[in-house]
Image (tube, rainbow, N blue to C red; front, side, top):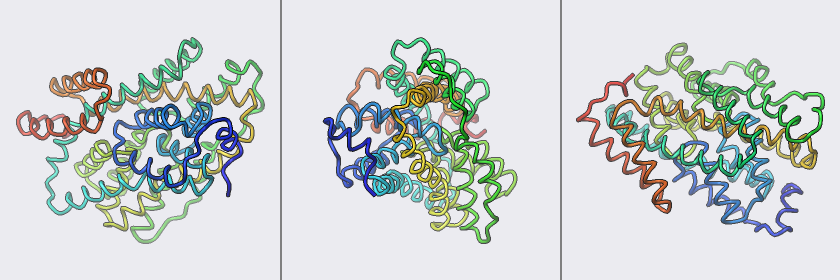
Length: 399
């Protein structure tokens, strides 16, 4: 399959057409070094692919961000798959999907292997203790960069942003309906035309798909189907599925205890790439390497499928002013929800004076020395955590 027409037009207009290998190598590196959660990774892609390399136009990037928000899947991962798809069709989407997920998969499998062998989880909690505040700082910095470009001086955009952020903080989770509502409002507010009859969104299909997936025999098949169903519920940040995972993995299925589950979430947060890579850790603990692979493919598959289906539809009707308004509404809501999600991350990562100071110091360092590699700041946080944890003994980390 050839890349979509809109992608060809942008290249002809002066964009640089990357090869399939270049795209795969870029996302392999981003998957290995991309810390800070969805907003940080999305900001990296805007900076690298739009501003530095000129592989995408600003419009293409905004369209991809809207698709990633409107369809199930980790936002940053889905945005990456979109970038591959608009340049090289299905082959590009699949290449990016594999390259982006491979480094965090290997790292988490290695961590899970060590975890099961030594059963010494305190170093993991120590790492989480030190890295967590740095992650919050990375998210805040990326939110600032992304919001400054996306919202600019548009008062209507700022109003939608504030509502989306406030709702996310109050309900303490991401709401699919919030994205849809922002898109519908965008039709009115940004296109200046009345909305057409609402069409069923991909989110509406989630309950149906959850209901028709059959029960599986064998732990590997059960893990794949469970995490595939879970992947259909991920919108924006992988943090949204943490309460859902605990309900089933710990409380209903009794696959893991509370301690092991908390360690899996910590690994997902301190690893590069999407937070949903926690699924790999859970899968390994339950069924070894086969379980890790099944859980990983399951959690990421919906993002790939929905991106491939939604992108051609969006590009075919990209000039429609109502669609532009819908996309604009969703885009500004995404920024608000991601800022609100920072609060959810901060609640679990910051709980005492040391972590408050570490988060503040990280922010100062990130804004002062802008060329300092972010992995270096993460590494510093990890070392501080390993040193301070046995001394401070923060009980709140265990809760």
